[in-house]
Length: 404
Length: 101
Image (cartoon, rainbow over all chains, first blue to last red; front, side):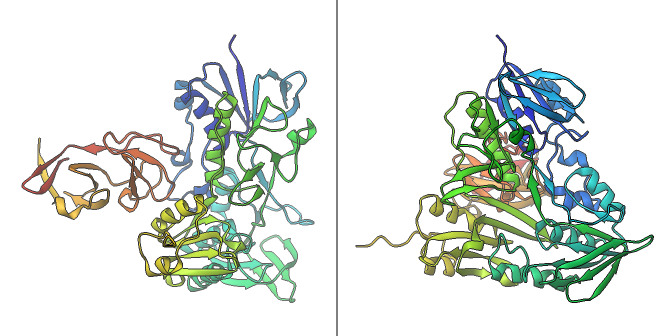
């Protein structure tokens, strides 16, 4: 009998589950359900090329209508799922449709975190979906106030500057991207943004934010007052775990899954931002908010649901593009206590190898030098600490000398 | 076929790749032993140059998102690649690599 595989969430992870199921020969029905009205698309360009106007949503599409039709993937778009009945193995949508499943995938992703106590206004933006990017694009003129010095805040600041917008960026921590970078790399980003004309206010929290008729007014903890035409609140995201929680799946800051993406219910898998999963390099459970995680965990979860014993256990990796500088981050370099440079990353080309106190690798950051990460990844995977002298000298081989 | 000079065989180390321009078209040349492959030097997923990537196991890996292309056919070999990259016929004449655009 033909099986029904249902996927809730039609972003990067959901689309890759659907694609992989078909590519691996699943012949049953695949229903991909997404709350957004758009064909599944990749989010990274939303803060960069799409926001700047250099690319359209089409260029970021992951599964066009034609692709979906050719692969017999049913896309239910603009549809919200409100409940999962695990005992009955079915889900219910907001418009009352009940759909049975044999295997269910939760790829529900994340939503933006909001500042508490701020009244909604057309002048106050967040950025997660394509429609957010369209609205924000229309607001990119005059003066933009960015709240949050993480990756989204920084990429929007860079895009804004490229469009000639005045940008003030306020970050509560004393440095940028403190959760994912060591201080040397935070400093590079701060320098890059200051050189490009961003007014950076680090170590400053926002006491109040209000949208008046024609202006945004913000008061910072040090008492300074800022005025802007628009504001972007970019203070992080929260995993969409509510459906999983309501049906009793194990959830702990993310849906708990094993290395094949299986939740605490053997018929339900999950992948992407929404999961917390084991990672050998991290030495524990992690929840990752990255494009690569959404794609690669989804591929493994689809295989797992088809009975393959595939394991997802990659060293985390992501990238950011700002002012023509490509940063690639491998592992968890923020956890390092020392960084060793190769080339001149602080001046724009080179990399840092980030090590724990005991010499174990924590991660690496490549600045316009993606190739540097390749040999490191191999050593990290093999749990070998790179030879630091060879690394700093730019040598191709980084294996430590074998002791005699 | 119309053959155009692209580079010297010695310009491309074994197992490595270089980016060249042939009549204005960006081309990545890859050498595997005696064999030379020529592919369009632009990833079909992002806007990255494949010649900044890595050659391994008969594939070239895009440096931006780690997607793999088959060297011989240009076919996608891993996510996120879904569209093949164009490949060009190659011949070697007196130590020079020539390709047919």
